[in-house]
Amino acid sequence: MVFMAGLLSTGYLAYAISFGEIGKTLNTHFVEKVLAREIKRHPANPALYSMLGSIYYQSQAYGQAVEAYEKSLDLEPRNAETFNNLAWIYATCQQTRFRNPTMALVYAKQAVALKPEPHVLDTLAEGYYVNGLYEKAIAVIKQALAMGPKDRAYYEGQLTRFEKAAR
Image (tube, rainbow, N blue to C red; front, side, top):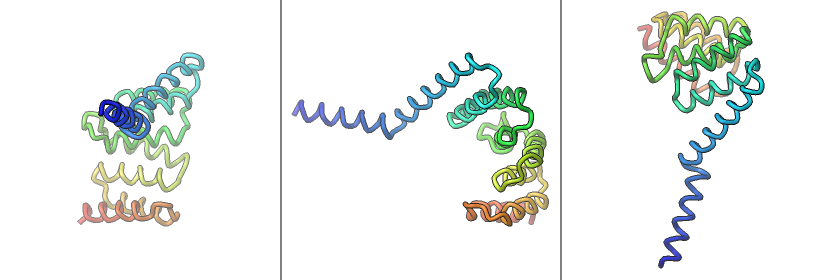
């Protein structure tokens, strides 16, 4: 019985580390540490700050994500993906203290100017939406849909949401 209990406990722990929240937390923590070390070695590398921002975003450390993305933009002021990621946080963040509809729109417009792809247009549409500019949101999401995005159902859902708000 003791052997079986030990075996089951070990099996559960291995499963939790491999597939559960414990594993995700450990992996995120490890990647964060590696990025921090690399930033110390290469402090002028904007890609490292952008990756760190994404790790923080996934961990819901929104303030740190914003700081990392802003640092990345300081080093590389024409990075569409970083502008897009910041715009998304400012438009949709779960923690309202990090929402800034005005900056969401500013950054989303900059991202689209650099990279007019469906996911970036979606962020611009979201920026218009959170600023109450529903007709512009509809026009931009239709533009994204016209590009034939992979996840068409998502974009159609966005269009429906924006159209409901416009009524």
